[in-house]
Length: 347
Image (cartoon, rainbow, N blue to C red; front, top):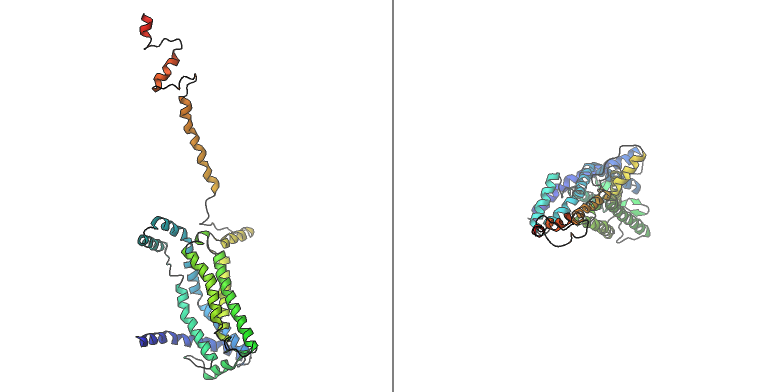
């Protein structure tokens, strides 16, 4: 069974090693022979790693767009999900069925927002192993030659080699560079998550399980990267920091130009469109103004009119008795009632 999974993993990762090594070699050739940089310089390999990262992230833009759309649909459905929770909160099975039906009718999948991240994972591990092994003088499957692997291993950047790590560092230059990259990686991760949470999430999505997950990622992911980053070589930290910067810039562009409805970013875009004279998009999640609600209350006052009508003008109508009989004596103030006083008049 273990051999099966090892063979499966090798079958998935080996093609990725060839793809990533081809891109890295292409950028190294560009900087070395087209821009006449030293092929063995750490700056040349650092720029090659940055070029590799940018190329991979550019190829993953369709997955990022799909992730943004799925996340936005999930945010827009949060009010309806809360209504279902109030209605079927006592029945977990029925709640799950109705929630999945809601997602199906809306044409979205709650797992679609995680799918792009899962698909990026093998690519990241391929990049990680390629750079990590090359930085330590070990060649893996791919297009990198042994001479290129040795060049990466000996390449120095700001007094630190591409293969150096914070753990086991033998010089201050290595410690300063690795800590700087770890802090940059942690800060970009936090700012990216905070940007999404604060600017591109409607108020209705700021509570509940979805919001709790976002808050967890906001504070936990940077800590995980900071703790794990001290064990990564400089080359991998350089890749990771560049990837985070790309993600932050890409997300900023999407939020600014195509924000989710009902979010602060959507309101800011409406204001920019008004100032520039553009057509302002309506917010489908905008709440109904409260000014229309108080019109219903005062209309209950006419219900008091029947009481005033039942009150007689002379003051005797408050005596107990049946409706019309209590008012008949008022029609004959002289005491000659047509029915009760006839016998008296005859006498």
